[in-house]
Each structure stands twice: as structure tokens, then as C-alpha cells.
Amino acid sequence: MAVALHAVADSGVPVFFMPGNRDFLVGEAYAQRAGFRILPDPTVVDLYGHPTLLMHGDLLCTDDTAYQAFRAQTRDPVFQAQFLAQPLAARVAFAQQARAASQARHAELKQGDQSRFETVTDVTPAEVETTFVRYGLDRLIHGHTHRPAIHTLQAGGQTCTRIVLGDWYEQGSVLHVDADGVSLEQLPL
Image (cartoon, rainbow, N blue to C red):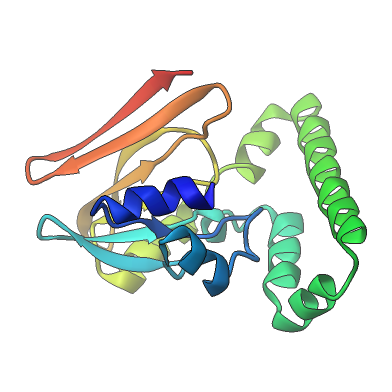
């Protein structure tokens, strides 16, 4: 993967990376090897003269308290140092266990109250509004929830746009941004 990403960067296309919930340990050494720049979460960028907030999106899911506790643990530098000091087999086992626990929790939520599942696994509307107001921007692009859509909402007295990117498990999700606007496209895999 690093070689392919570096080839893109070498062709003159800037490559940026914002770590998510499974790749939070990606560091500068790998970024240099792959030719990309790591973006902090969140980051404000200028897209064709339009200041835009980029986020992974998990910080917006404040109703998912179990995930927020996991996120706090895995972003802690002491935890990361202790984790990286373990043998590879132990780290792989931890990752597999964490993924299995997450999938089991989602399956349990899904079998129960569907509205509770939707609430826990999606953004918290109040946190979205707070984020728009905090940054004073009217456009946000994020992933994490994997529910591709373009949402319009009111926050801080202004009309705002929240763009949600999809995953790449069953379909591709591509966001096109240019001076004329944005469009979100789903691609068959």
C-alpha cells in the first residue's frame, strides 16, 4: 500500500491521510514511506475558497459512550507506547478482539431497539451543531458512520452542509468537490 500511495504522490497528486478508529497508530515514519501527510482530526481546509472542516467523524458520535471510552484509551500516548511494546501476536489478538467486540455490540444493538441502534451508531445532532458553531464554518465532511449523504441543517443561525462519506465494503463512496459545488457518488465494487 505504501508503494502505491507514494507513486500517486510522486505523480504530483498531494496525498493526505486522517487516521480513523482502526489506524490511529499510523505515524510519521509510515507517512514518509507512503508519501502522504497526516492531517489532525479535525482539520480546516480551503476547498476552492470555501473553508471546510474535515473530521474522521467519531468525535461526533457522543451517544456511543463505549466507543468514546475506547477512543480515549487508544489515543492515549502511554497506552500506545505500552501497546507497541507488546509482541506483534499480542497486538493482533487485541485488534481482533476489539473488532469482534464491536461487531457483537452492533449486532446486539441491531437486534434490540432499532431507534437505539440508529442513535448510538450515528452522529449526535447536538454535537454536530456545536461543532459547526465552534468552528464558525458552514461545511463539514466526515466519515465513520458510513451513511453516505449530504445533509442540510441550521446551526448558529446559518444554513450548514454536512457531507458523510461511505465505506468501501460493499460500494465505493467518492466525493467530488470543485468551484461549482460538491457531489457524492456511490460506485459498485
